[in-house]
Length: 114
Length: 111
Image (cartoon, rainbow over all chains, first blue to last red; front, side, top):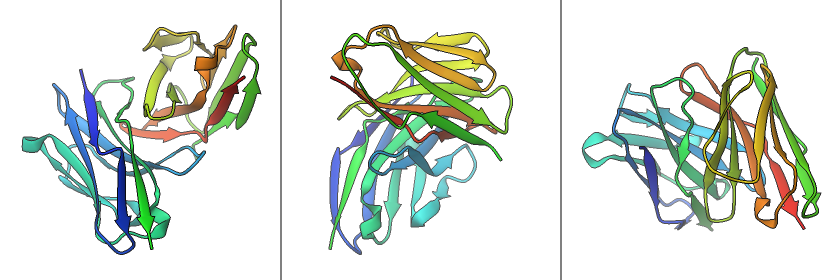
């Protein structure tokens, strides 16, 4: 069975500071990993995904994540936070089989202060 | 281009009333379709998924059901809503191997 654990339900940073959102996964088969962002009362927007190519994945809005198999992690980072980054972030996992769904973590709310 | 439509955007229903939420996909054929529910503090819970017309898999026992009457249509239903059915419902489809796109969601409040 696959699962995702997001460490920290709420992260607060100052504008211009480093953003680090943590995600650890559990999977018995090679995983495919995703980060999504959700703004209030909206659907999910894909930030980036790892599908067994380069382990350092660059996404939209200056975010990136690194797949570390030895640590079973896929942490999301951004060098400098903007006020517009305040949202809820979800890490998700799936694997290589037709029809499989995304399994999500419980989410991390990012707050950015000026 | 491929798009996903979900409606209504918001819905307030009394306890015991029926429910029907619709999701349609354009620009593709035979998509894998999914219904998720998001409740406060619980992340996104997979409710149902479908790999084809009439093929529905349920992930959790609940008061809801799903149907796929057409290739690009996925419907979430209930005969009698409970207070615990309140939440944000998201439809999604899977494309190009491992891409997933989500609809804009339906905020359901059961009163």
